[in-house]
Length: 490
Ligand code: BES
Ligand code: MG
Ligand code: ZN
Image (cartoon, rainbow, N blue to C red; front, side, top):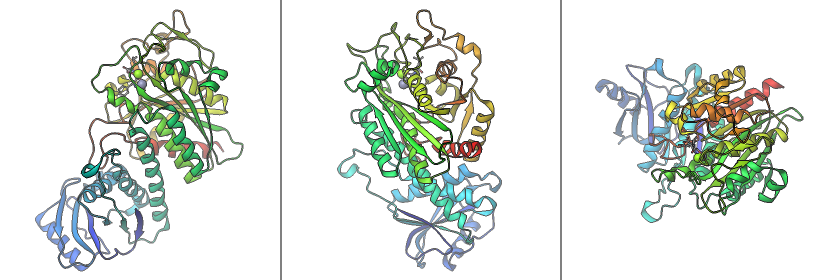
């Protein structure tokens, strides 16, 4: 797919999509006569008044396009980056599904033009992801976009740069979604490591992986305990991006449970299939590293994915077990289904061992986070408020939902162990916060942000521009936040 910005639409498009603010009389510049005339008609009848509502018109005498789609952009004063992304993505996805290959977009620009144009590009690229990897024959979706042109009256070069940036970010997101969408019979820890290695070689990241033998020698007792019930042993996957010489590293740590059955504390059968997505934090980490390698900012980031499969078997870890960790602290297992925090304990400690002086982790960690903020927002916890305020601000600017939940010292009281140092569950109430309190014990007191993506990584329903399944949500905020943090540290 080619995505570009042009000052004139080319001939022979399958469709030209014109966004229209409700109640607006403005006719966009740069359209041919036939199109402008039709737009005038649409306004007369009053179509596409609501956000994402469309009016579809066949163009019989236009050389520009076969059809005109007028799409509601909603009220001008409500328009923002999130809406921009939805607008472009919705149009691109529905037209592609109807067989269109060449599209022209005439979308709002103005003062925030560069931000909007990046969002349009992101929306289009995100809309091309479909989860039917193993569809055969007629089920296979073979429809692809070939050419997407954004019309811009301005010759501002930043528009082009931002469209390119949007493509890189969204492609990184789609890469992460691809990893997460793979079924668990094909996506086990060693396979995730292979994919991360292949990607690292392609984009020029330093890479290494610890296999079960190296994990044993290194004292990674926590992740080994979680993985010991599966024939697929755990892996600790490391990718390093160096863009700022010997400046300190920020560590990004992802939960990579390639399948979470719950283990001996087994989950109910209903929706257990969804637990193939329990490596989303790891997939997001790998996608983030890929984007950084392509954008080449002047920062240093180390990505760590703690990958294991959580299954019940004769060799599985049990409720009641006390297991060690790389950090040295002992963990009293009350519930083998609270496995994410156990693998992350070793992931967080290892990232610090490798030189990270700040930490951000991403994990589909708790059902409690989904209860609290639904499938709408990423739940945020922290040991450093000022740094987190910046994260929340960037999420707002990037049009992604993130909301902070508390991490009071009382939650740490709930996980004080009887036989071991720490319990791996803090009881029924405040489950997202007690999980965060557990992780904090493995951060060595460095600034740390925990993102519980359980609700947002794989929402239950599809959106017009996001196919069912893996979302990639919060990756773009993380990328912008890492760049901001690294640059301001220098
Ligand atoms: N992977 C799950 C959390 C999860 C639940 C993610 C729903 C996405 C959707 C995690 O490993 C888990 O099972 N957590 C338990 C913890 C409990 C046993 C303390 C939970 O949230 O029920
Ligand atoms: Mg679990
Ligand atoms: Zn899990």
